[in-house]
Figure (cartoon, rainbow, N blue to C red):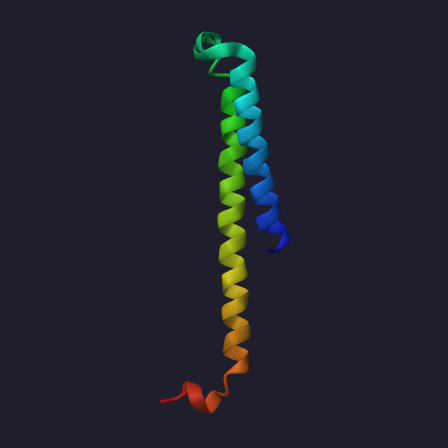
Length: 79
């Protein structure tokens, strides 16, 4: 895994853990009342983590595809 994937996974894991701790701290009824401020921030952290993972995987796949194309001789690529 590259650094982008690891960073994205860490952001998602941290967001999920913080969200669970926040839910335990406030309790179920208090969470419904205060859902909008910290929970939105934690949810944004999770979403940003997922986006970072997606982008890093796409970039990694692109680089792997370019490396594979460089290894194949040009004669094999032409019909």
